[in-house]
Amino acid sequence: NKLLAAPFAYVGSIGVIMEVINYNKALERFGANPIVLTAGDAKAPITATGKITKTDMDIKKADLAKIHTAFRDLVVEGRPSLSDTIDTVGNGNVFSGKEALSLNMVDSIMTSDEYLLERILAGDRVLKLHRLRRGNKSPNNILNPMDFLSSFKEEIAKLVPRLFQAATFAQFFRHIMTKQHHNTNNILY
Image 1 (cartoon, rainbow, N blue to C red):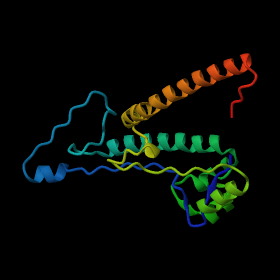
Image 2: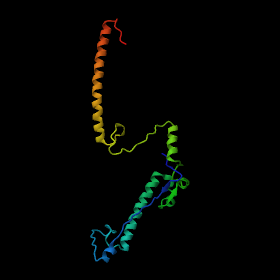
Image 3: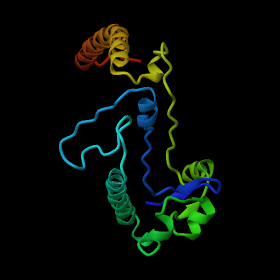
Image 4: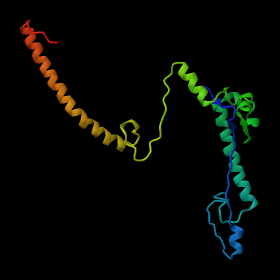
C-alpha cells in the first residue's frame, strides 16, 4: 500500500474541532430564560441555549483532547513511520503534497492522472465509474437494484425466444446427427 498525493494537495489536518453557536445571552436580552436540565455533571456541558461556564469549557476541551489523542494514535497505527513526528504533523496543520512527502506523510508525489497512466502502462485494467442520473435506466448504467430488476426482466423477455430457437436448433442438430450416424451419405454443412 502506498499513499500518494498531488503536489498541490493539502495533507494533514490531524486535529479535532467542535463548533457551536450559543444564543444564551441573546435570549436573555429578550427576556427568555433558557433552561437546560441534565443528569451528571459532565452531560452536555455546552448547548446552544444554556449558560456556559469555565468548567463546561474545560470539560469539552478535555473531551476534545481525548478524541485528538485517539485520532493521532490511529494515524500512527496506520503509518508507524510518523511516530517520531506526530507532534509536528498531528497538530491540525495542513501541508502541501511536497511538504507532506518531506515529513513522511505520503510515499510519493503524483497526480491521479499520472497514477492511472502508470497503472495502465503496467497492464492493470482501469475502470471508470459513471454517476447514474435520475431517469437514465439504460442497461449499461444500472446501479439501483430496482432498476436492475426491471432491466433484468426486459433482458429475460428478449432471451426466452432465443433460448427456444437454440433448443429447436439443438433438437434439429441432434436429429440430423442421428440420421447421419445411421446413414453416412448425409453431410451436414
